Image 1: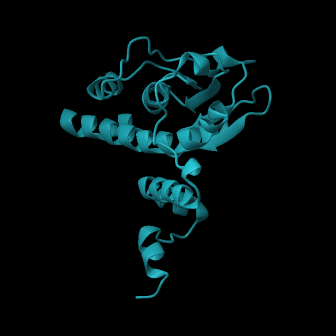
Image 2: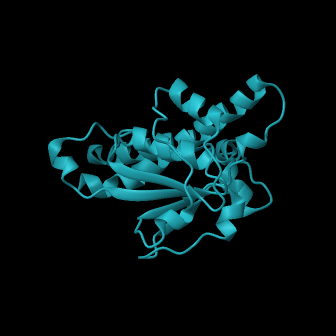
Image 3: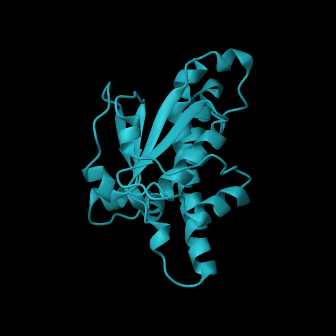
Length: 203
């Protein structure tokens, strides 16, 4: 076994850069990142999620993140609720769709099963946010990525190509499992993203 073997096993090399990115085990990457920082200096060690906000931190300006997909019914809705929950409200999370419909009942169920309130979630048009400023725009489906509108201040754009759980056929159990899997994928990516989003709030 060569020294390169462990990396090759952790990160197989598909044919395109895009497929390489989406095949990464982000839990492993995050763990390695955190351990490397701690090894360099204890001050660089970071917790997986931030602590509940103190009065001092509540006075600081929040980061604003907008999640976009086509129907704003499942992926972007779960991402909005999950980020708000994982950041303890330190990050202002929003979601919208290019062709909004309604919040999928299974998206609500999966969130509530994780102890996250789905109250207040509603499908919104991206037009509702026209002219508003955000720090990051995260597209969670390929279709809306191609037609993503511009926002003031040229916010950083991030794309996560996630399969739509609402398209899964089969039993109700199969459909619920698809939504559950999507929520797990989102939670993993959001925890990784929070490492970078929370840094300005900690200074």
